[in-house]
Every structure is written in C-alpha cells, then in structure tokens.
Amino acid sequence: MGHDCPVCGKKNEFASKLVVHLRTHTGEKPFECRVCNKKFSQRSQLKPHLRIHTGEKPFECKVCNKKFTESASLRVHLRTHTGDKPFECTVCNKKFIRGGDLRVHLRTHTGDKPFKCTVCYKKFAESGSLRVHLRIHTGDKPFECTVCNKKFTISGSLRKHLLTHTGERPFKCTVCNKKFIQGSELREHLRTHTGDKPFECTVCNKKFTRSGSLRMHLRTHTGDKPFECTVCSKKFTESGHLRKHLRIHTGDKPFECTVCSKRFCQNSHLKKHLRTHTGGHDLNIQLANGSLVILQDDSSLNCAFSLRKNGRLNFSEDDYLSGRRKCTG
Image (cartoon, rainbow, N blue to C red; front, side, top):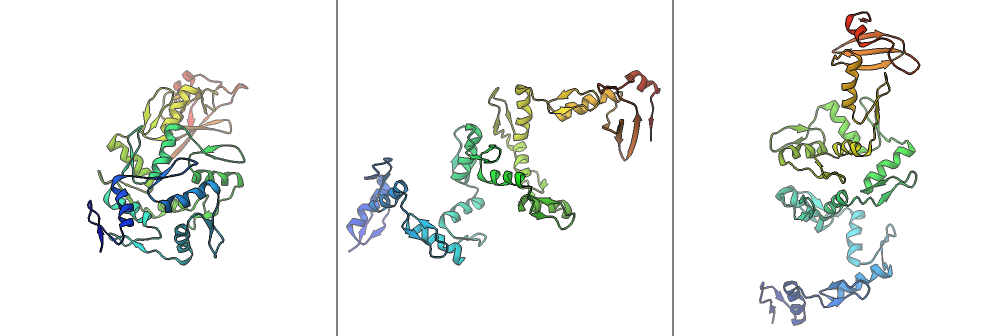
C-alpha cells in the first residue's frame, strides 16, 4: 500500500519516505551541523556537508584524478569527459550537463529574474550574478594580482589583467593582424570588419556589436543607474562615468595640455581649453615637432611657431586672430 502525501498527493512507497517528504512542506530541518549550525531535512544531506569542514573528498575521477565530497558531484563531473548532456531545453534544444544549468538557461526565455539586489533593486537570473553585482556596492575585490597587487571583483578580470604583465596576445585578427588578449575581444573586433551587430534593443531596435553596449544602452530606457559615488551618492549609468566623476573628489587631472601644461580631469575639458590656443576655433588639434597641427575635416593645417623653454606659445592670441601668424596648408 502506498503512502500519499496529504498536501500534494505524491505517492511514497514507505511511511518513512512520507515523513521525509512532508518536511519539504513544513520546512522542518532536524539534522544540524555541529560546526556551523546549518540545518538539513535529511541525515543523508548532513553527511556530505560535514566533509566541507573535514576536507575529505572520497570520490575521485579516474580520468583526471579530481576529487569530490559527494558521489553525485563526481557523476556530474564525468559528463565533462563523456560529453553527455542529458538536460535539453524544450524551447531551443540547447543541451546541458546539469539540471541546474538548464533551469537557469530557461530564464533567458521566460525573462524570470528571481534574485534581487537589496541595495538598488536590480534583478538577476542567477544567484552568482547577484553575488558579483553586490561587490559594486560593498567595494569587495577578492581577486588580487600577485604581480602588482591590483584587485578585481571577478576572477575573469584578474585572468585578463595578468596578460598585461606577460604581454601575451594570443588571439590575432586574420583581416588586419591586430592581436588581442581574449578570444571574446577578437570576436567583437571582427564585427568591425563584417559590420555585424547581433545585439538589438527590444525597445527602439537600435543594434550593437557588443552585448555590453546593449546593456548600457538599455539603461537609457529603464533609467537604471547602478554605479553610485561613495562620496556624494550621485549615480551613473556607466562605470566609466563614475570614474570620471570621482576625479572631482580626488583632484586627479590626467589630461595635460601639450602647449601650456595646464591639466584637466576630463579629456573633453582639455579639448575645450585647446580652443584658447586656436582663437576659439572648434578644431581637433595636437602638438607635433614644434608645430600646432590642426586637423579639420580631411585637411591638415599647420600653424608654425617656436616654443619658449616653459612650453608656452611665443605669440599672443591677438597675433593669431589678426593673421600675423597664419595657418598654412
């Protein structure tokens, strides 16, 4: 005789199994870890948990010798060697090694984002994505470069950064021979040659070559500003905008005028300042070989002058405007 669950009607072969099953409805967890006080509904769940504290990993992969605390984890791992992907998406037929991976994937079709940030209320499809996001608010950067001690919020950023020390750029564009640190960077770069823009905004149909560009663009529709200044609480849609803003508080001025050495916190401020050297003309200028090279449209104009030792121009703005110092093509 079967033992039916009075809550959901599930049939259980034994009364003992019904008792265990009922805990899924009651939330009862009678088995407690004496080390960290975590509780479990079944004794069989407590046993593998204790191995986290003891470090015991009795289940070993015969292919690569990797060890695991649970036999179930080993079974899942073996699929990486066999290529077995038993969990298939009924929408797009994509297959997965783990049932959990399929559940997460299905949210790309349903749009379900069950994990919400308690600080800014942004939602995520995966708990791991939320954990990484929270570091924006906490400032936590657990991944540190062993060469220069720079810290990062995610391990992928650290791996990419380490290549800046080795100089290695293993991914080469077959069109223009430009090299990249990551394969994903090369794939994005190739779209500049093909013109492919696979990421489309569902609101205004604007297309982008990179998924990151689409994510940033979507904030113009949602009004989402996830990057907050820890000094004055001003919020920004992009991390780059926050970095620029922080210079107001730190006083950092990385952009220097090559003509008069005045420094600015933003490149746009430097460009505006350079007009004072060109008589107010909105031109793209740069200093090269003692001459002020002015780039306008497709032409290059050269304003010849010599420099004082302090780097300042030896003619006034009035000289420039009156034509006593003229630009020649």
